Image 1 (spheres, rainbow, N blue to C red):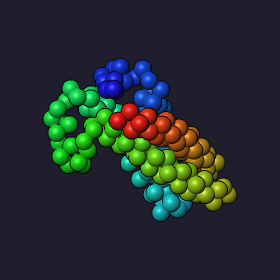
Image 2 (cartoon, helix red, strand yellow; image 1 turned 180 degrees about the vertical axis):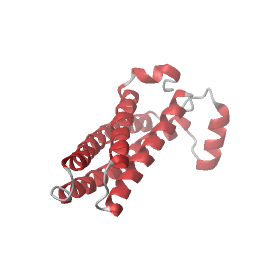
Image 3 (tube, rainbow, N blue to C red; image 1 turned 45 degrees about the vertical axis):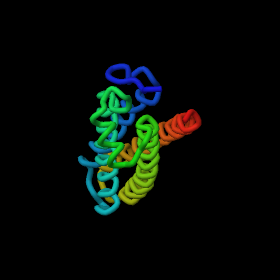
Image 4 (cartoon, rainbow, N blue to C red; image 1 turned 120 degrees about the vertical axis):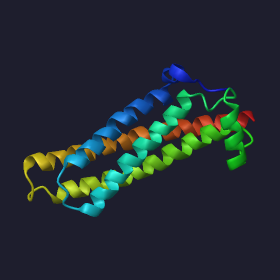
Length: 166
């Protein structure tokens, strides 16, 4: 059973959630980039997570839109089958989606915790505007965490169903 490709990608819940992940991940990225940095190591991790997940989500969405998860792109099937040893390309893509979104959910959870801690430490020592930037970055990273967790759960369910069909 091949997945959708092109603009058909946006007709299913899993792929529509990519857009929400872009929006909230991008907001975290923008807010962290524009805020004061009281704890460079913690906020550096938050910035890494937001950029890494934004790029990873972009690459996955681009690959799905190109139709790389179905049999119409044999060059990618051959390359991925050779590199990863995957015999079933559709199963590979579902597995990749589940693993990437599970990892992103864990990363964003850690980013949320660190950003909330950074915002709480700067309550009295920074202006209200800078404090609110960090609070909103923490809130948006929490929303991104929830989005990635929901996507990961549905991806794991889809992967399990695909494994049962084989």
